[in-house]
Image 1 (cartoon, rainbow, N blue to C red):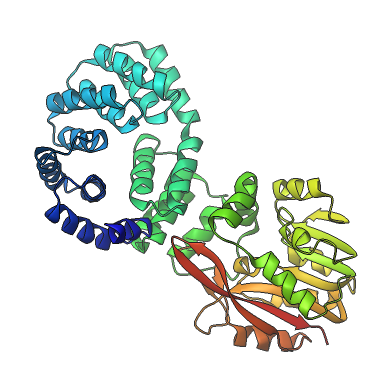
Image 2: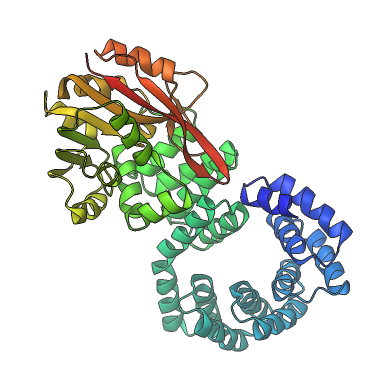
Length: 450
């Protein structure tokens, strides 16, 4: 059971299904196994199999509201709306927190042509889950079926306003490895809001993570049709088309970190185990780096300044994200904070710095020459460039299609460094972060300007 749960969280759905099935064969009433297996069967539209599994579990004594909600959904998908509504009603009374049961109940009553009863039940659900998007949409359908068009339109407008919330929820499910739930939510959203580019784009990125490039390509192409100017869509569309750019689109990076700013520190440090600033600080201090004039590229919320607190004289920070800079400004650790592209900024500061830091920055830069050339001019002779990379198998650069981040290899980076007047880097192998229970291998490099 533990292996099945781990596989599910890691996005290994076929393995999770096989393992959960073994548990169910040994114990038909094992709630966790039944929920994982029925959810996976519903995900791949094996609805009849899911129904058999859930009925067998109930016969074996499993008295579970979530399992009942899954069975009600099975029944509804097969057109057994009367039975689905009866079961879903029982589940909502037993466990009102299960929004999926309220959704199934409302949809089944609408299918039974009982819009007034559907509205009553949906409103009960909304009393427990205020402004819940799927229930709000069903409320619009129930009111339209009763020819109360103005009220229906207001519900639809409210649902449209909640689209961003739904996308954010699905993105969080994706990042936590709950791919089945994330895909279900994205597909519901694109079905009900077909002109929402963020929904199509989010689904496309999720499908890339699941190694489904052709399906991802379709979703990302649709997203670009709806919003041709979106840099994030362009970035991942290039990944899906296997024609990646040699650097991340600046609009994509800015949007990513503006959106991420509020949860950045807690998510990256606490959830993903990110410790690169502390490790890079140790490397700088152990190598007696001159920290009198420091530039922090992609400074974000100021994690590098905190890691080096008390050890530098002056530090400037540059970042594309204004919201990240707002958070960094609160600590008062930087002499100057500038919103700019790191390459453009480095070009403007010849011989200004004794050390330049780039923690988790090169993952958004593929081809490094355009960054190293201005850095070589910005760093004084004898100064240090300290940076982190995610590792690949030996290429100068590559793009991970599942994450959209760039990867490099120390040997290839050393050759580039030497071409721009740096010594080969001193390398420290490390783990960049934990993602879906997997370590992301990386390295910290310290290269001196000759």
